[in-house]
Length: 211
Image (cartoon, rainbow, N blue to C red; front, side):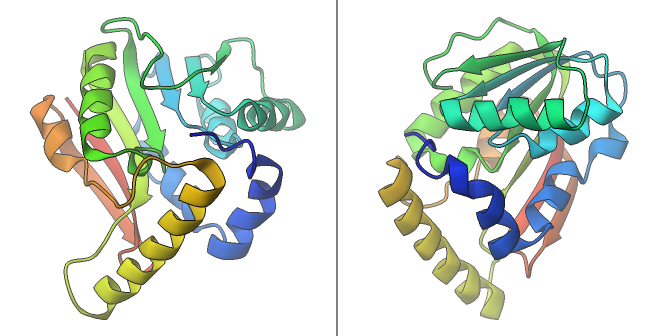
């Protein structure tokens, strides 16, 4: 899986297709965070969340892992263009499933629009691995697409999901064919949902999970 092919186009694709909704989801819970020191960001993409987070937490140590070199370059350029310091940011080009993470090293984990990329068995493996890297009191920010329970929003979301997965499987060799909700896996690793924000008729949700 690599987003290198679509990286040059992502900056216009996102606002064209979703406006500011994805960024609102990424940043919805920032105001509820405090005393953040060591952060793991997986699948950051072009750096929109990273720039917003750096502005609020300029002293935090950030490890940013992405499997796309082009997305990492976009994230680095975005931080520099906004005159935010990158002194405490480590950019790592790696597959999150394979990259070794230190144990109990991060008090915040961030996975925005990332967990939906994986098949169920991969997601279970990844969440278990991330949980081991999180401190006992860690928080976890995640945003993703979801499917509402019933009615028109459900039918609409299922159609949009089919289109998205068809496109991204062709463009990025995405492993997943459908969405796997991560909630039971997060609970299994000791995390509890503290806040959830939904938008776009339930298509998008943004969560704050805490241990």
